[in-house]
Figure (tube, rainbow, N blue to C red):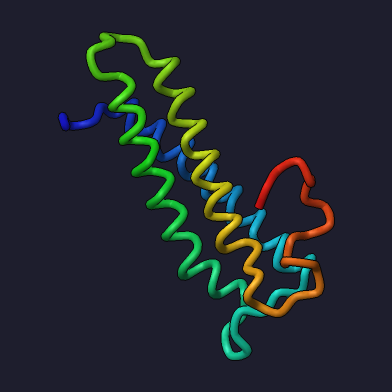
Length: 125
């Protein structure tokens, strides 16, 4: 793939980084609501900061770049549809990451399946 432009890099960091921040906040709220404890020696906040933040930032930024470039190939100056496709891909990936890490049903918690009561039933986890 060709080198990305400054605008594409900016968009990937802003959109991917914002989605990653939202995922971390959502996961933390879910863990707090369901009293999920990952490890007795390490706090949940430390785990999210040192594991969750880097993983979510890398996944979101790389996914944005891949989808944006694939959708933009051969389209000249068009950028709206690739931007929409990349945003939808990030949303789906973040829902998958939240379902996997944000609601770990193998860990003890007070909510059934560690799904918080405020999570909409229409959105699967």
